[in-house]
Amino acid sequence: MDTIKHTLKQTLKQSRLKLTLAALTIVAGSTMLASSAHADRPFILPGMTLNSGNAPLITFDAAVGENVFYFDHNTLSIDNLVITAADGSIVKPEGVALGKLRNSFDLRATLQGTYKVSIVNDFIIANYKENGAPKRWRGTVEAFAKEVPANAEELQVLQAQSRIETFVTNGKPTQTALQATGKGLELGAVSHPNDIVDGEPATFKMLLDGKPAAGIKVTVIPGGARYRQNLGEKNYTTDAEGKFTVQWQGAGMYWMQARANDNKAAISAAKERRASYVATLEVMPQ
Image (cartoon, rainbow, N blue to C red; front, top):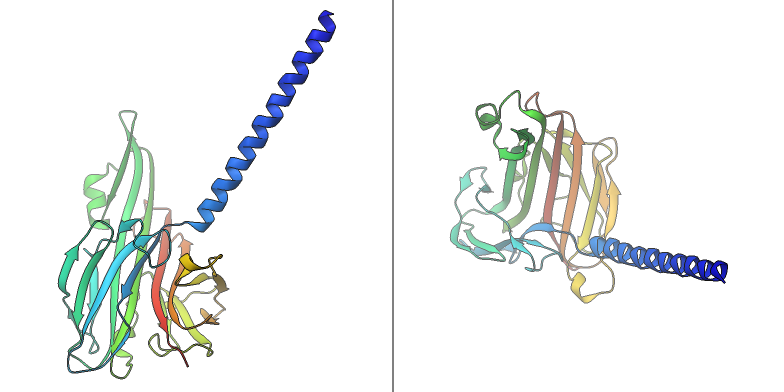
């Protein structure tokens, strides 16, 4: 009798264990699917990219969305906003408004030609321990040496560079504002970003520190994912010249992202540099 009771208990334990493992597998699978569908994606969204007139006013929203181009997660800081005018000069935004889900600003395009609107970040992240307690520091290259002890316990340092941008044109597209700065990951224009049309593939080039970046993975997602069953992303890899060609999936706004990692950080304490690039592009109908 005791043997039968023991066998029944063992069987129940094994059944409960199998059910628990099955439940954990389902939860893990659901979490992975959710993570894939909902990622944090920063963007600058212009009201429109093509304009005309003496000095058209163009408005922009800066945000971080779980869905591309939707204000459903957080604002995107515009502290490091840089607007490059059609003649290469730097101009200031107008009508800045700071919100809880988006930050907005306007640009008065007084010149004919293409403007580049960018948010550029370049900072150092350090993790270490102080008297046994974990510390996390973020700041500029210049501040790092002053504020982080060189002999900090378990010191780990990396450099993070990001560029988030879009392009708008008053009248005919021009090239002056598109010149790369030579810092971090940037888009080199083979096809002009304000001269792309549905049905015509566009070729771009990724540059890292001003040089062609080969083997970089680029993701392109059309806007409007909220109203379709799939994200619709397409992935490309840059060739030996840093080039890749995009096949559009219809007219509208597109979100583009590229990332690169290497060991070419600006300070010797940082063993890794992470560079990212995001652009909003508008594809016009035929």
